Image 1 (cartoon, rainbow, N blue to C red):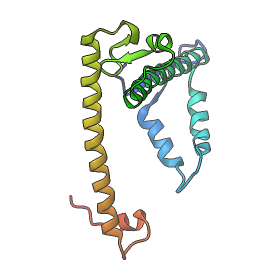
Image 2 (image 1 turned 180 degrees about the vertical axis):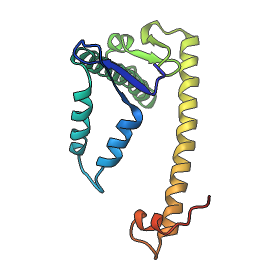
Image 3 (image 1 turned 180 degrees about the horizontal axis):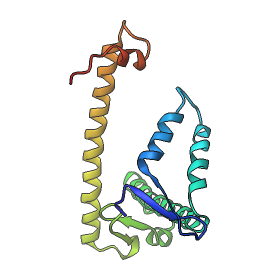
Image 4 (image 1 turned 60 degrees about the vertical axis):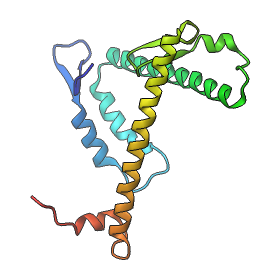
Amino acid sequence: MNHDYEDFDDDGGDELVFVTYEQIDKMIKDSIPDRSDNDEWLDPVINEIADRIAPTEAKRTAARMLVKARVGRLTQNANNALRKWQKSGQFPLDLMDLARLPLALDGNKTRVRFGAASATDLTDAMLYQARIFAKTAEAHGDLLAAINSLIEAMRGRFTTVDELFANIEVES
Protein backbone atom coordinates (compact mmCIF):
# COMPACT_ATOMS: atom_id res chain seq x y z
CA MET A 1 0.00 0.00 0.00
CA ASN A 2 1.52 3.33 -1.02
CA HIS A 3 -0.74 5.58 1.04
CA ASP A 4 0.48 8.14 3.49
CA TYR A 5 -2.30 7.09 5.85
CA GLU A 6 -4.11 3.99 7.02
CA ASP A 7 -7.93 3.86 7.20
CA PHE A 8 -9.65 1.86 9.90
CA ASP A 9 -13.28 1.32 10.84
CA ASP A 10 -13.90 1.67 14.54
CA ASP A 11 -15.96 -1.09 16.17
CA GLY A 12 -18.02 -1.72 13.02
CA GLY A 13 -19.74 1.67 13.05
CA ASP A 14 -20.18 4.06 10.16
CA GLU A 15 -17.54 6.46 11.42
CA LEU A 16 -14.18 6.20 9.68
CA VAL A 17 -11.14 6.54 11.92
CA PHE A 18 -7.75 7.20 10.39
CA VAL A 19 -4.32 8.21 11.53
CA THR A 20 -1.97 9.93 9.14
CA TYR A 21 1.73 9.28 9.17
CA GLU A 22 2.14 13.01 9.74
CA GLN A 23 0.06 12.75 12.94
CA ILE A 24 2.11 9.79 14.15
CA ASP A 25 5.36 11.60 13.28
CA LYS A 26 4.22 14.68 15.20
CA MET A 27 3.34 12.59 18.27
CA ILE A 28 6.77 10.93 18.12
CA LYS A 29 8.58 14.25 17.68
CA ASP A 30 6.60 15.76 20.57
CA SER A 31 7.40 12.79 22.83
CA ILE A 32 11.05 12.03 22.13
CA PRO A 33 13.23 12.67 25.18
CA ASP A 34 16.67 14.25 25.01
CA ARG A 35 18.16 10.85 25.80
CA SER A 36 16.75 7.38 26.42
CA ASP A 37 18.26 3.93 26.82
CA ASN A 38 14.96 2.20 25.99
CA ASP A 39 11.83 2.85 23.98
CA GLU A 40 9.35 3.17 26.87
CA TRP A 41 8.84 6.80 25.88
CA LEU A 42 6.97 5.47 22.82
CA ASP A 43 4.27 3.84 24.96
CA PRO A 44 1.99 6.91 25.14
CA VAL A 45 2.18 7.29 21.34
CA ILE A 46 1.50 3.59 20.79
CA ASN A 47 -1.44 3.73 23.21
CA GLU A 48 -2.89 6.79 21.45
CA ILE A 49 -2.64 5.13 18.04
CA ALA A 50 -4.02 1.85 19.39
CA ASP A 51 -7.05 3.72 20.76
CA ARG A 52 -7.80 4.97 17.25
CA ILE A 53 -7.65 1.57 15.57
CA ALA A 54 -10.53 -0.88 15.37
CA PRO A 55 -9.84 -4.16 17.21
CA THR A 56 -10.30 -6.44 14.18
CA GLU A 57 -8.13 -4.33 11.90
CA ALA A 58 -5.57 -3.89 14.66
CA LYS A 59 -5.20 -7.66 14.98
CA ARG A 60 -4.75 -8.05 11.23
CA THR A 61 -2.26 -5.17 11.11
CA ALA A 62 -0.32 -6.57 14.04
CA ALA A 63 -0.33 -10.05 12.52
CA ARG A 64 0.83 -8.67 9.15
CA MET A 65 3.67 -6.74 10.81
CA LEU A 66 4.70 -9.79 12.83
CA VAL A 67 4.69 -12.13 9.83
CA LYS A 68 6.55 -9.65 7.61
CA ALA A 69 9.14 -9.12 10.34
CA ARG A 70 9.65 -12.87 10.59
CA VAL A 71 9.98 -13.20 6.80
CA GLY A 72 12.63 -10.50 6.95
CA ARG A 73 14.40 -12.32 9.78
CA LEU A 74 14.31 -15.65 7.94
CA THR A 75 15.73 -13.91 4.87
CA GLN A 76 18.53 -12.54 7.07
CA ASN A 77 19.12 -16.08 8.37
CA ALA A 78 19.62 -17.29 4.79
CA ASN A 79 21.99 -14.40 4.09
CA ASN A 80 23.91 -15.10 7.31
CA ALA A 81 24.23 -18.80 6.41
CA LEU A 82 25.66 -17.82 3.02
CA ARG A 83 28.15 -15.43 4.63
CA LYS A 84 29.21 -18.10 7.09
CA TRP A 85 29.63 -20.62 4.28
CA GLN A 86 31.71 -18.13 2.29
CA LYS A 87 34.01 -17.41 5.25
CA SER A 88 34.41 -21.01 6.42
CA GLY A 89 34.31 -22.77 3.06
CA GLN A 90 31.97 -25.38 4.57
CA PHE A 91 28.33 -25.86 3.72
CA PRO A 92 25.85 -25.08 6.51
CA LEU A 93 25.12 -28.11 8.67
CA ASP A 94 21.39 -28.08 7.98
CA LEU A 95 21.10 -27.74 4.22
CA MET A 96 17.43 -28.78 4.29
CA ASP A 97 16.61 -25.92 6.66
CA LEU A 98 18.54 -23.47 4.48
CA ALA A 99 16.63 -24.72 1.44
CA ARG A 100 13.35 -23.74 3.14
CA LEU A 101 14.40 -20.13 3.87
CA PRO A 102 13.33 -17.17 1.71
CA LEU A 103 15.81 -15.43 -0.57
CA ALA A 104 15.15 -11.81 -1.59
CA LEU A 105 15.72 -11.16 -5.28
CA ASP A 106 14.67 -7.52 -5.38
CA GLY A 107 13.74 -6.38 -1.93
CA ASN A 108 10.21 -7.07 -0.77
CA LYS A 109 8.86 -7.58 -4.27
CA THR A 110 10.18 -11.01 -5.16
CA ARG A 111 11.31 -13.77 -2.86
CA VAL A 112 11.97 -17.38 -3.70
CA ARG A 113 12.46 -20.41 -1.51
CA PHE A 114 16.23 -20.76 -1.34
CA GLY A 115 16.15 -24.39 -2.45
CA ALA A 116 14.09 -23.46 -5.53
CA ALA A 117 16.44 -20.66 -6.61
CA SER A 118 17.89 -20.93 -10.11
CA ALA A 119 21.25 -19.52 -11.22
CA THR A 120 19.30 -16.55 -12.63
CA ASP A 121 17.58 -16.06 -9.25
CA LEU A 122 20.94 -16.16 -7.47
CA THR A 123 22.33 -13.62 -9.95
CA ASP A 124 19.35 -11.35 -9.31
CA ALA A 125 19.85 -11.75 -5.54
CA MET A 126 23.56 -10.95 -5.90
CA LEU A 127 22.86 -7.82 -7.98
CA TYR A 128 20.19 -6.72 -5.48
CA GLN A 129 22.64 -7.14 -2.58
CA ALA A 130 25.30 -5.20 -4.53
CA ARG A 131 22.84 -2.32 -5.02
CA ILE A 132 22.02 -2.32 -1.29
CA PHE A 133 25.72 -2.33 -0.44
CA ALA A 134 26.40 0.63 -2.74
CA LYS A 135 23.45 2.63 -1.39
CA THR A 136 24.35 1.83 2.20
CA ALA A 137 27.99 2.78 1.69
CA GLU A 138 26.97 6.08 0.08
CA ALA A 139 24.38 6.82 2.77
CA HIS A 140 26.83 6.05 5.55
CA GLY A 141 29.45 8.26 3.91
CA ASP A 142 26.96 11.13 3.65
CA LEU A 143 25.86 10.60 7.26
CA LEU A 144 29.45 10.56 8.51
CA ALA A 145 30.22 13.75 6.57
CA ALA A 146 27.12 15.48 7.98
CA ILE A 147 27.97 14.47 11.56
CA ASN A 148 31.55 15.65 11.07
CA SER A 149 30.27 19.01 9.76
CA LEU A 150 28.14 19.40 12.90
CA ILE A 151 31.12 18.54 15.11
CA GLU A 152 33.27 21.13 13.33
CA ALA A 153 30.54 23.80 13.61
CA MET A 154 30.11 23.10 17.35
CA ARG A 155 33.76 22.74 18.29
CA GLY A 156 34.63 25.26 21.00
CA ARG A 157 31.40 27.22 20.50
CA PHE A 158 28.37 25.09 21.40
CA THR A 159 27.77 22.17 23.76
CA THR A 160 24.60 20.81 22.09
CA VAL A 161 23.11 20.70 18.64
CA ASP A 162 20.14 22.70 19.98
CA GLU A 163 22.55 25.56 20.81
CA LEU A 164 24.09 25.36 17.35
CA PHE A 165 20.69 25.42 15.64
CA ALA A 166 19.57 28.37 17.75
CA ASN A 167 22.54 30.35 16.44
CA ILE A 168 22.28 29.47 12.76
CA GLU A 169 20.81 32.12 10.51
CA VAL A 170 18.36 30.50 8.14
CA GLU A 171 18.44 31.79 4.58
CA SER A 172 15.07 32.38 3.00
